Image (tube, rainbow, N blue to C red; front, side, top):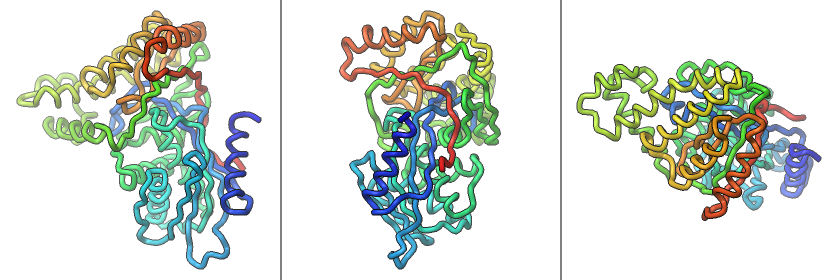
Length: 390
């Protein structure tokens, strides 16, 4: 069996073991890696993620016919087969764990849209590393939104799936994320990145040159976004935008950044400088992806990482060391930077096929030989977004 077939089989067996019946349908939504445009989605900027060939699979069956009240029951097979259940209605309470709140939040916001959510049972399995910055949470939210809306007979378009999953993560999970992760999971296309305008939600598939490979290096350092400085960074960006009299930092130009700084403190100025400069790097990176321009990618991704390290301060010394080692090893045959919210997680390298081996060697010999947490290297394929499998 291939990777997806194994996930489907695990979800099917988990459903049977938990609910004593067979599921009727299967749904999948991928994780994502952001190639550039970090911490700018909630600033209404441009981002360039791609969906990856790691995903969440949901096995779905109708609600238990013996239940007298409409209910959603679920089991998280990757969390020790922990179960959850809640009644459908106007008020869906928060639960103890984030994975439960993703499902509860999605059901709540689907209901708010007037969709007649039907009782259902869900078994959830995935192969996206949790806490690595590859959007396992967005994948779960989008897969749940697709499964429950399709089960209700009203499948939603990718932007609607993304919006519902984002609201669930914002309001039920407590992470003030933007729309990027969910849109990449919902609307990704095979062999393409997704150029997304987070202000308008307009998006365009960007073909990735067949000369390039996308290599993800998992640092092994885990973090929880809602326990990190993520929400603090968002608040700092909002304060900086207000200083410049703008709704978001997307509207601030390089000229305004310096000219109108006034009494803006150093920390907020550097946060704003990262966002403005990072947005400016997105479209040139898209062009470089299409052309396979590895030297341009080297410069652009390096500048992005340094900005995240120095201006936005979301990197860690271990991540900086990892990125520096890989940057030296690929030697102009592509670029590398931290990816995701930061404070651990992954780095992404976009390199020529010939340089992939250099990444593996650099990590195993140059980094892992003295690292507290050994890093792992994977080559990911840009993949399609969320879909019903059967």
